[in-house]
Picture (cartoon, helix red, strand yellow):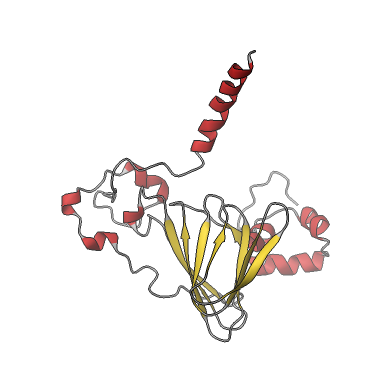
Length: 231
């Protein structure tokens, strides 16, 4: 096979895969979905099936949201409160390839535990307080620093990252994502609250059965197990 034929074959295989990993490009200015009188919020997978509302029937209010005006509900364990806004909560975001979130950290130690977004890069703007924030790349290198009010940090797509309030006052962070559905994988809950077989976690993390029970209790055991290998 000629070299140029091989290159064309590789491109034919790789380019479609790359294309489906990103939000599709919009083909019109905007598309506020018409839920057909069924109301909002609607589930993200259903949004593309809705027709767009007529621009003639839209007003400025359709493109404005107060979803992050107030903090969400705080966790007693972490001192973290989060509010995520996707097209399901704010339909005007539909087809625009973005979403946003508000994170609040209680004073002196409130933490947004390590997590990652499998489908989006995040930019985080500190609106108030002092926040120690950072991410770990695929080579295991940590990039972290204390952010002051008005400073921004970027967390590359699918990189594990975190935020910790190191100030004396509550802190607020505003995050934006380059995907309508960034997704979130919370590391502690995913590892210790998803029902992974005990032997795997004990061996991988060097935990005693008692230590593992404590972690599983904190992060919540699953109601059902999908694994074929049960205890």
